[in-house]
Length: 435
Image (tube, rainbow, N blue to C red; front, side, top):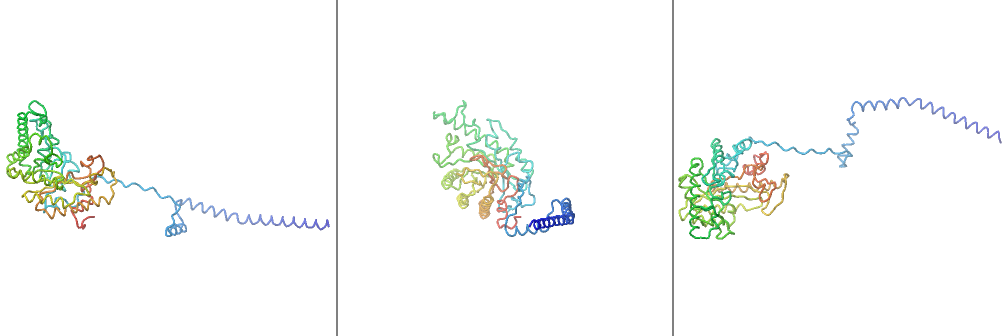
């Protein structure tokens, strides 16, 4: 029994030793081939560390086609750079587009007679109006002291570039020197209760107004043929529907009559004299203005036309109401002007701020509304003497601070002076020329 066990142990040891020898031989045979393959792969990676082999590319394409997202990180998109301001000389000219209809104008400040803004104006408009520098306080801040510098600069720029000028405005309840309304002793005229003194104050105020109007019109009558004589005198909510300004409280409607007569006498029969107001599409305001104008005409007051400011928004008023008001005054034989056109992105009671990222659909809504408006102007060119925008591009507009401070974009050109959808809607309503 012991002999058998010994034999079994001997046999097992021999088998184990044989297996070990075979294993060593196999390892020695295959190790060089494996190392060579690894070294070759490392060499390929060193030569082209960013390459992808064909098998990986095929796999990636298959994953994309199947709709399964790849397990790779997407690069962070870079923000679109804001274009530099420039004047697009290759696009149509507004003034040339409407040459057979009416002049196109813009309200400007003297600083805009230089640089890119001046180039934009020279390309697109043939009528200018002063946004502020021809208002009463700007020209005669103190009695007898007239400041012509800024007004002269604007007139000179227009003449140099073959443009006409509109004057805005000889009389207004705002931006007018307080000295106009103080009596000989320096006291507020409106506070006077003595009837005799009130009458004396009225005569003094009308005399001051007559001098103001005549002095300005005589200076510019050869350069300016279209004049806003009185501005914003109607207010339906005030007594008699007349704005309760110091002008009206002290003189009644005599200041309107005085201003128009002085302008005609100083300027002669060739100048065109306008009464200007906002909200003329509103029936209550339109009708009260109509009554006033008809009353003045019956007295022989030389009113040639009505200026419709046309500060509107993308929601209202209707184009029919704007044109309908013009038709009413045309029945009196008067000219109609659009004097201060802009189109806010906000409804009147909307106090939001859209910021700089204005939705494309809102800009398109603005474009559609501008298209409708100018198609109506074209169709009624016989009763419209001209269209003036209250600015030229979105980088400069009073609507950025009224009725609240915010971003607005009311014009045909954006802050970079580039054409907006609204521009193309106006110059090319059929959509044939827009790039």
